[in-house]
Length: 165
Image (cartoon, rainbow, N blue to C red; front, side, top):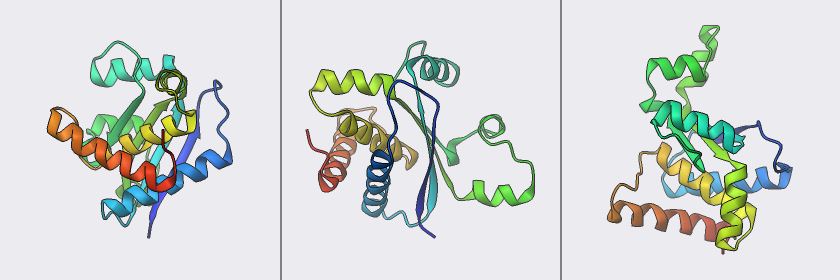
């Protein structure tokens, strides 16, 4: 088994190219290697600001758009499982068991941030994807020390793949 990426595009603000997906898969493998994750699946969905705003409000109680949301499989409630995974037969349960979680990225917000920070949209999407992946593994940035750990790991992975500022 290996770490795999399943993705879905639910926005029309930016074209999702095969090259971008290949780069994100490369980032996933590098981040998984760094964290000694040898198997699992990550589901990535690209959305717009309106959709991520709704998710942020409904799941986090924050009534505004954000750039990335992560829903770790091991932290999901039964209600979230019902929403995220409509299981119709027992064979699907095995697939869910290997699921690390879901990452949802607002491509619209990523475009705005790439402009604001003066780097490419690919770099911003890569940053948000690795950020989301680390959240799936339990990393957080609630204080300065944990934010530094997370940022250092993100930058290391991005640099190894050549997505620098």
